Image 1 (cartoon, protein in one colour):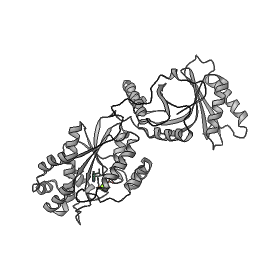
Image 2 (cartoon, rainbow, N blue to C red):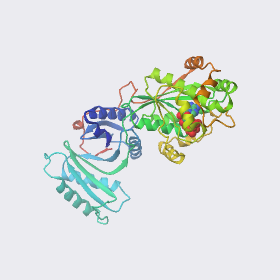
Image 3 (cartoon, rainbow, N blue to C red):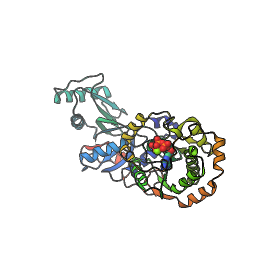
Image 4 (cartoon, rainbow, N blue to C red):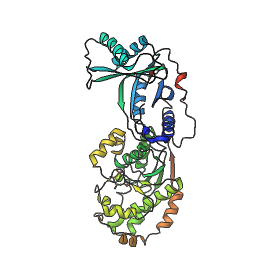
Amino acid sequence: MHYHELGLKGHNRTAFEKRLMYNVRTLLENAPVEKVTRISGRILVMYLPDADTSAVADTADLLAKVPGVARVSCGFVCERELDTMYAAADLALREAEPFTTWKVVARRSHTDFAIDSMEMNQLVGAYLCEHHPDKPVRMKRPDVEVHVEVVQGHAYIYAQSIPGVGGLPVGTAGKVVCLLSSGIDSPVAMWRMARRGATCIGVHFSGRPQTPSTSEYLVDDIAHVLERFGGVARVYVVPFGDYQRDIAGMVPPSLRIIIYRRLMMRIAQRIARKEGAKALVTGESLGQVASQTLDNLAATNAAVDMQIFRPLIGNDKLEIIADAQKLGTFEISSVQAPDCCTLFMPRSPETHAKIAEVEAAEEALPWQTWVDEIMEKIELHEYRCPSSYKGKPSVAAKDASQAHVGELSSLA
Ligand code: ATP
Ligand code: MG
C-alpha cells in the first residue's frame, strides 16, 4: 500500500504510519492476511499462502477504500535472486492481462544488492521480452509497468495497481458528530470527514413513534457500509416524531423546518460535548432545498456555538450521487423511508428566515426541557471503528525481515 499525504507530515509521520497500520490490521480481521508491516515508505500486507484469488482481490478493493491509502499494488515478494525475480516478474505480467504494451521499472533502495536499477531493467526486460514476444515494450505510457523493487533484503514485484481513496487515516484528526439521515447526501458528507482522518459519530433523528422505523434500519445498513473502511464509530438514534408533531402545532408552518433543524443541532451539540467531538457535520449543499439557502443555514447555525462543517456545500446532486455510488451507500439511500423532516412538512417553507423571527417563534416551545428529555431517550448503536476499537487486532504486525519467502508469496 502506498500513501502520499502521510509523507508530508514531517515528524508526525511515524504516528500517522502507525495509525494507518493499526487501522488496516483491525479492518482486515476477516481477510486471508498473515501480517501487516511497514517497509520503506510503504505498508506491506502479506496474504496467507492458501488465500484464494477472489478473497485476495476483495481484500485489495477494501484496502483501496481505507482512508490514508493512496494506491494498492498487488504482486509478489521473493528472494533477491535473479531467476526467482524473473519468474515473479513473468507471473506479475501475466496477471496484468489484458494489456498490449509494457515496460520494467526497477529500483534498489541500497547498494548492498550488486545489480543497479539500470541493469535490473535490462535483465528483467530481456527475460520478459523473450517470454512475451507478441507484446511490445513501450517506454512512454505503457499499459502495464512491471515494478521490481529491491528493498530491505527482498525483492518486491508487482504489475497491477488500483487507486486508493487517499486522505488521512481515521483517528488522526479528532472527533466529529455527523447528522445522518437515510438520504443520499449525509453518508457522503460523513465519509468525506472520515477521509480527512476524523472519527465519525452519527446522530439520526427518526420519525418514530409517528412513523415506522424504516429510516433507522436504512441508517444501520449505511453504517455497516461505512464500518468496512472505519468510517463510523457509533450512531445515536433519536425518536423525534412526537417533538416534530408538537413543533408543528406550536410554530408558524413556514418556520417548522428551520425549527426542527435548530432542535436537531442543539441535540447534536449535546452529544458532541458528551463525546468530546469538536464539530458538527451535515450533508447540506447550497440551494439544494428550501432549508439550504444562505439565510436558512445561518438561522440553523445560530442555534449552536459549535462549528458546523458542510463538506458538500459546493457540490451538485449528480456529483454527490456519483460519490454515494462509489462509496456503496446509494442503493440503500434510494429506498424510500418516511423521513422525519417530511413529516408535518409545510406547503411553503420560508426560504429567507430571519433569526429574530425564528427565536420569537421558539419562545412558545419548552425546547431546553425537550433537549434534556431527548438525551434520556436516545439509543446508541456501536460499530467497529479502528480509532475506538479496544481489542487487539488478530492480524499480526511482525517485522518484514521475519517473513517467510521461500516460495513466491502474494502481497498487496
Ligand atoms: P440527505 O440526503 O442527507 O437526507 P437532503 O438533501 O435530503 O439530505 P435535508 O433533508 O434538507 O437534505 O437534510 C439536510 C441535512 O440535515 C442532511 O444532510 C443531514 O445532515 C441533516 N438531516 C436531515 N434529516 C435528518 C435526520 N432525520 N437525521 C439526521 N440528520 C438529518
Ligand atoms: Mg434528507
